[in-house]
Length: 216
Image (cartoon, rainbow, N blue to C red; front, top):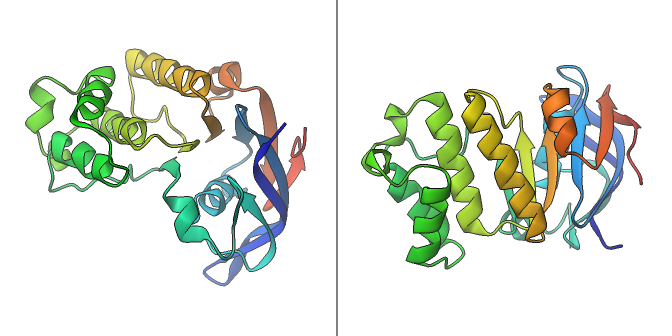
């Protein structure tokens, strides 16, 4: 089975301190992998390396067949990262945000409309600026942006944060649909019962290292 993520001995540094201290991780195409571990364990740093956002100091590997040290920009164009900040332009409306991300991959107006409808953003919220949205509405807008970008690898950091029960259920449904369509998902979450129900494998991160479940 093809591996979408292959990290070997990855060391990454933040603020002069090692955020990752030798991570070995493989993720096969179509998997849903849950990263668990205490705060500060390195879960977010693993996601950011996979997204091409955090430089690798030592070690190496590939994401979607691209080198994590020399092809970070190319990686960023093919993955979707839902982090704590959502990646929205706060001075743009919901529609403008999603159209912007659609333009980066050549998505059609029909795809934009479908993504907005899927996340419940096609009504009055369509013309609301992102800085006036609730935390849950911003989460929905960020997910719609990921849908329209056709991301092959979904990287999600506490995706259920700020959402009500209905919103959490909708995220779970969107992730299941994405996997059915061929995407791969790596999610970091403290909500182990909910996220664990989605996951095909649980990986434990502690002290900047994978301590359990890093390989199939």
